Length: 276
Length: 276
Image (cartoon, chains in turn brown, cyan):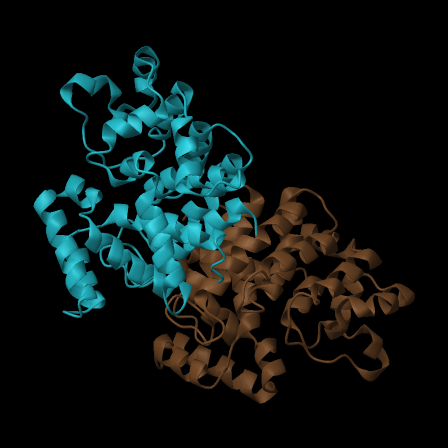
């Protein structure tokens, strides 16, 4: 299996893990965002992942991946996961799948990569925070319309991630050496049972460790902290993950960033020898 | 989405359909043959499907698909489905996805295609019937060791399928214009609800319509007839598909050929505009 195929498989294994309280998984879905949308998203994302492995610019590979991912009717399925996977795949293709290796990849991104990144928002509605007032012209929700401002300000894709790192756990990975992704991989490799079972467990650990920024964006900081506390309670044996899943789905609490980190962790684990 | 991607998605949607009594699906699996093995199988099969779309010889594309599919620890996941998909993908790539079109593809196969087909058995153990005594040298279970006999007898891949058509519902598709695959596609297109729901329904219809040859091979003709009668009963409102799934799994009754036909039907339906 090639690097890009492992990344595609990681996307599929992530959504196959169950229970992953609040996320779409094999047994739970939302009426408009269903399991099959994630399958189609993973199929469509492949070309962009392959581009990343073949040395295409990171931004362009990401845009291609998101464009392919969007060829289904569920909307945003794996935008955040791809934002982690694309630089990780590049690092792996250079035999440098490490904190230092992927940091070199992301710090090497350019203004053109940033423009491609903004274009990716044209494909799909992504739930993100508005930027601070003084950076309103860099609001990613404008999509490609922000390109002139990106060029004008001369910000690289790494710069864009740095600006978003406070409120976005995926962007934060870019500026912290993908530490949580590598940590998730170690937990998955050290875990017991089938890969989806390990993914489910890793998901609870990732969610418990830090408030999920996707929940913060969709609800508020307190809701996100509460969700992490509930995940920790399940890990401590107080209550079941299945019950927590029911509560989260009923309240629209979707720890999407934690799922993105698990996808990245699964990919790294596959590169490090995890077998399916 | 390209033709080969639709075929990959069909493999994923097939295993996502639930309940599919007796088959691995999102909610049911066997201890050694699990959902994630089918995910990895679909990832690995892609190159062979792309080869089929790009005009590589049918046998070689199939061998590549099976080789990629086998890069997981569950064993045979989608051998039969790929034997249907590869010629269908070729026909679609020629804008001839019809009974006549795919028949031209399969009748055009050569001795070299047959040799590749036999080589595909080296990758994975496939449950098949032994051939009649006088064709013992063409027993597919020999894998590539049968290549000299294939060449000596000058049999094309189509000839091999013709020899197996009596006892193998996949081979029978090759010699009957893929009629059941096209029929499954029509049912899926005409169905209601999400694609996995349609796949689950189509599976029962396919199984009810004709005894499953994989059950015949693993058990006997009576068991296969009984399984079809039970599927019909569910369609008639007598008993639930979920209950039937429990019975089949408990008794190791795996209607694998019916699942292969549903995968082929899903692919054709996707080519004909089915959206996910």
